[in-house]
Every structure is written in C-alpha cells, then in structure tokens.
Image (cartoon, rainbow, N blue to C red; front, side, top):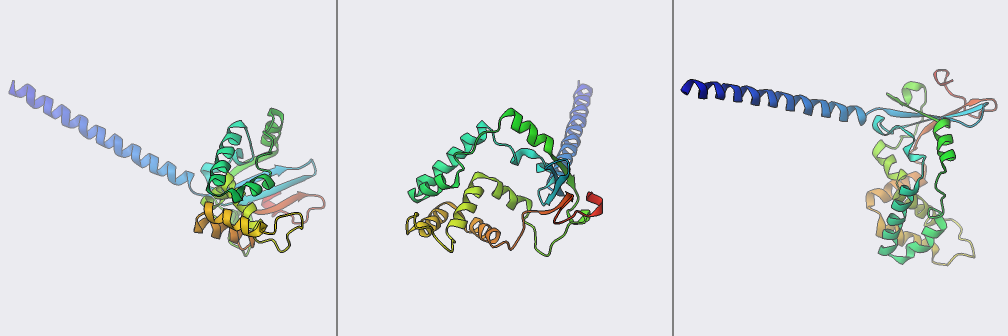
Length: 226
C-alpha cells in the first residue's frame, strides 16, 4: 500500500513539473509574439493609376500593418456615433463642430469600394522606414500615437485643433467659434492628447514618410522602392 502511495506521489510530481514547464514555454512564446507584433514599421504601397504609385512608411508596428484604418463599415459608423455623442454630452459646444467635421455624413464603403481599396493598397511590415532609404529631419509619430490619430476621437480632435487656431473666422460663423472649439477640446481630451494634436497641427512631427513612383513625380522613391 505504501509503495502504491509513493508511486502515485512520484507520478503527481512528474505531471506538475511537466505542466509548469509547458506553462513557462507558453508564456515565453506569448511574450515573443507580443514583442514581434509591437516592433517594426509599416510600408504601404498605394496604386493611383497604371503610371503612378505612392509609397508611404510609418511607425505603425507589425501587428497593425494592414488596411483596417482605410475601411469604414456599419460597425465603425455605430461606434463613431457613440463616441461623438459622448463628446457632445460633456459640452454642447461640440455640436456645431461635430456637424461641420462631416464625420457623421461619411458614407459606408460598398463592397465594390472595399475591394478596390484592398486591391490598390499593399501593406508590408518592415524593420524600419530609414532602412528603405526614406528619411526626414523631423521625428515620426510612434505607433501608439498614430493609433490615437486613427480613432474617431483623434479625427475629431484634429478638426477641433484646427478650428481653435484659425487665423481668420468666416463672417458666417459665430463670433465665439474659436473659443467654442477650445472648450470642446478641453472637455474631451487629455493634456497629452492636446499636445499631440498641437504638434501635428504645427507639423513639428510627421505621421509618415512618402515618395512617388511614376512619370511627373515630385519626390521620386529610392531605388529599392521602385
């Protein structure tokens, strides 16, 4: 009887060690995958016509390097409506800017439009934009910062930032237009987000690097991208 108990104990310990090793291996694999997905840059090749192609490269990491930010479907529209309603609830000064931004009137992509977007835009993860021969004296926004700009809040924030810093306000707009835009910004965005919006408006940093392939291109691409 004691021998049976002893053997059972050995088997149990062996199984526990095996489970622990497998668990440790799985955690290591998850960490490695997470690291890979959150590294690198994103190259986008957009075909404009048979004669012209625009090449763009940004800090978007490997895990997000695809066409998700180019498409707009019914689910996206519902989410956008919810986001903008919440902004308006914080202050009704946002209402006029939500309407003026045209975010609510954007049409949902038809199946034909969606297929065309997918066909004309090729995404490819890359180690770095600079390694492809693209460069700039200005720093690029990071992947997480770009994710903010891609959101509906980020898009609305860009519009509000522009409106609150207009050098000239049209006579057809309320005299408090710029002040109302600033209030909507203050009520809905953190200091970090407002700083990003300001940096973007002033073009102090870039969202992407770009070049063109084709006749009449203003900025020809490096040899490795042609």
